Image (cartoon, rainbow, N blue to C red):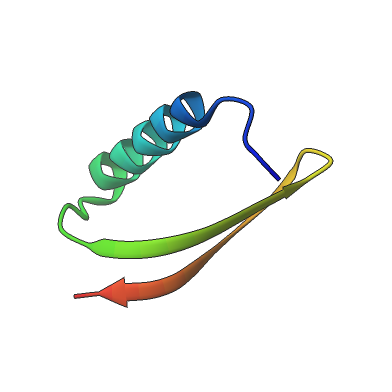
Length: 51
C-alpha cells in the first residue's frame, strides 16, 4: 500500500528519534525499523541493529 504523505511521515519519525536521543542520551546508533499501521494502530519492530 502506498503512503499518502511519505515526507510528512519521515519528518515525524526523525523528530521522534531526535527526542529519544535527547531524552535517553543515546546519540550514536544505526537501526533498521519495520513499521506497520492498521486502522491507526501502529507496531514498530527493530529488524536489525548495526553497531
